[in-house]
Image 1: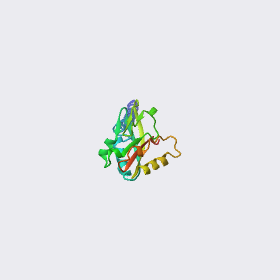
Image 2 (image 1 turned 180 degrees about the vertical axis):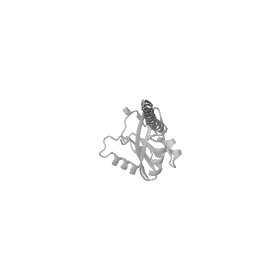
Image 3 (image 1 turned 45 degrees about the vertical axis):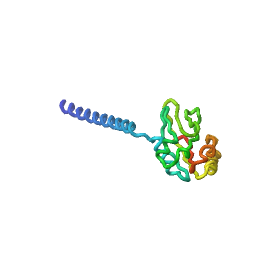
Image 4 (image 1 turned 90 degrees about the vertical axis):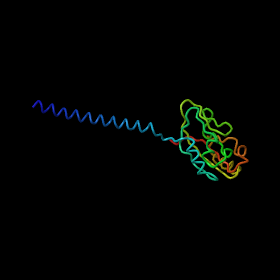
Length: 173
């Protein structure tokens, strides 16, 4: 009788060990899966894809992306991935400010200077004339006091058409 109880306990121990091993395996797969992939894409890729969609006249939403500390994207980077001239693309602060660690300088780049990384999204607006782009940016700014659009398209890309603005926004939660 004593041997039967001992054998039953061994089977029970083996079953518990299997359940624990399975739980550890699931946790490891979740961690490994989270390391290789991210919900946030490469900034240059998603921006250039949105520019291709919006150009020559239209609007597109930029998928969520991450800028790491001291990482930047400039108009030349985007120009090489699209058929647009680098002078026909400019960045605006959108929903961000200098206190967020975001800088757009003269509109030719976006750079993150914060401590870790910044999750962002955005909107691309392309128009055939600078007046049309200024009007579209004005409509975007109506009722949205949290947008900093900047100096306007006519001051930046008055010689090159179409003209595209990249308005940086916070990602939806």
